[in-house]
Image (cartoon, rainbow, N blue to C red; front, side, top):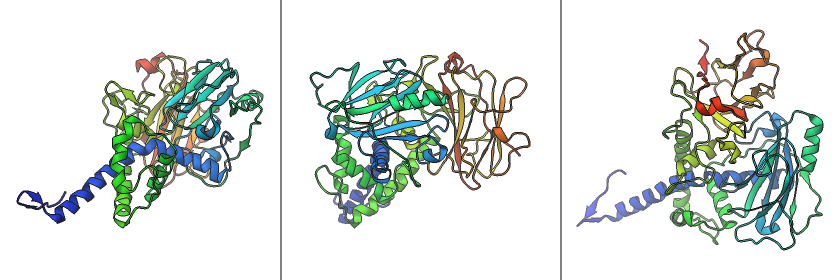
Length: 451
């Protein structure tokens, strides 16, 4: 705080000004952490609309690593089928999910699940019609739906991952996934393409607050957020008013975005939540350490939500499943066996033990620390998975290698290139995880530095 002076017990005029600046700065850093999920969603929606030309309900299909480079911790193995929709413009919408191996979701803009779709959803892979309502919207008369759910926000993300490697089945599932207004079932499904360099992660500096102000104007205010929004009024962010911060407010907001992100990094990459480690004998952490509703007991999971949504995007019940053989599981690796942050300038080895606890497949994916997106190493390869033709050891284990140079001889298929001078981190995904994962009886060792 620095020095504060008082006159007859009252803070001096200089101290009052300093205290108000400090108050606004502290509130802004906490508002940064609070707003991470909704700013990330608004940023992605804006990219869809302004860069890709995708309007409400238009589907963007992300297939290649290059197309996925802008998504926060995307998986590089399965295609994404993504659309956004503003329910205040469209009214209730219908989503037709085809029968087959898909894993989809609908999220509100606070990244809370509205409903899972496909294998982890109520249709359990058999397909069905999902009617999605906005806050306060009523089910239209005469509309037949298998499932009806209400979103917590007017703006939603919806999509699916197609989990089959069969190209014909992939085509069928993609063409059968439909989104349209409930009032207009004859609307023809439209598609758009990801193009040019783009990023979905939260913008930095004043643009962060511009994005927050813009999405705040388009959403109802939840009761849980009223105090946080009150604290932003002194910084020029207020519903129904333009965002025109003065020089003092701009300076505070820009510094708060910088410090807020540093706090978010500490919160994500060095989590202090009890039980966040997968096992005590290695440094792997649970990536999603929150309930899908973001509510536990008497409190909202503020830091847990921020830890996940700073480095990743979207949640679902299937992503936090505790039922063997369903959904996905995620573990994050940020440090090596020496306790050092992973460094793209160094060479590493990771051994995937035999009998990985999954029914479908596992994958290891590398991400840039600076952007939390797929590592852009010029090779088009950011992951290795059990679906690839990997060299295996005699016991069924697999050695994977990461580094800025060449792969070890004979291990080209087991290698992912890193970028010299760039920090990175690693996700292990298990699709349809089995009992040994939940029991923590499957031992996954740390990533080892090759010296």
